Image (cartoon, rainbow over all chains, first blue to last red; front, side, top):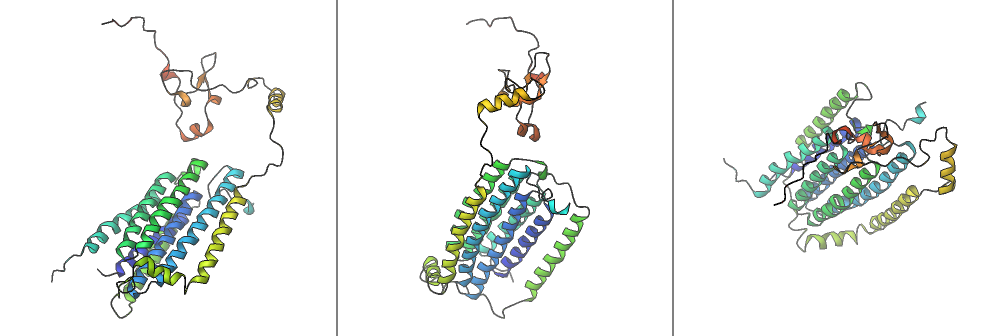
Length: 99
Length: 256
């Protein structure tokens, strides 16, 4: 099978994730959409690794996973902290600087 | 000419539309928990794609780290934070949704057409040679030679993230926790004496698991304070009336 199909799929998933970040209001769902974008990027890296016949792409995808895990840990801690002070996980409520 | 379908092709054309539908569903479903489950499905499909593309190690890591640890963390935080108004799909910024969809169509179209035009001028090499000694061995050889410095940096990043999460989650009290006596005094000092003996507990009816049924006050009205605010916000509160006994059944069942 032509491996370029995986690239199309990754592009679609990345776009869907980007729309989710803009459209959804719940901070946790927004965060999950960021994860979807990271995963789509990983699929691209793995596919390029296969197309080029070297393992470097897979190593970079592995690093991306580690960074994503760190990001999730810190991001969720931030969401919990905001929730604790504002009693809401909506991204619209954290707009104190606007007023 | 009829092309022979390899197993990978069939797998791709079954799983790829399903994962795209699941990703779209993530945007459209109302509850965050459903979004999380759909994302877990997308991640498992991606793990299968990785394994199909000779990235066995990454496929396993994807399942263990993403669907195992990360999604569990997401669900955990969802349970902790609970449901609130931010789950609603109403548009808070007017005109945002059409703009976002237009931008997405442009962005995705650009991406897809770029991939369609770009080519390396040769067919895919495949990983048979690179994986000759095994995928994990090949990755390890790269990781501990060329990429050893990034690897160490990433370990520092992990430790920093763990520390950061601990610092963020740590909650230092600025005033001491009020004792039971102080709470009691504070209750008496409020205007009314209604809550002096504590709030009424739910569940006066033995006919229902009644955490979600408000207690009845002596005058027959329901006591809204006896129900947890979370249940109320979620709309899981039941009406007390439906559990009232109409008339007492005096007939005794005949013994056999």
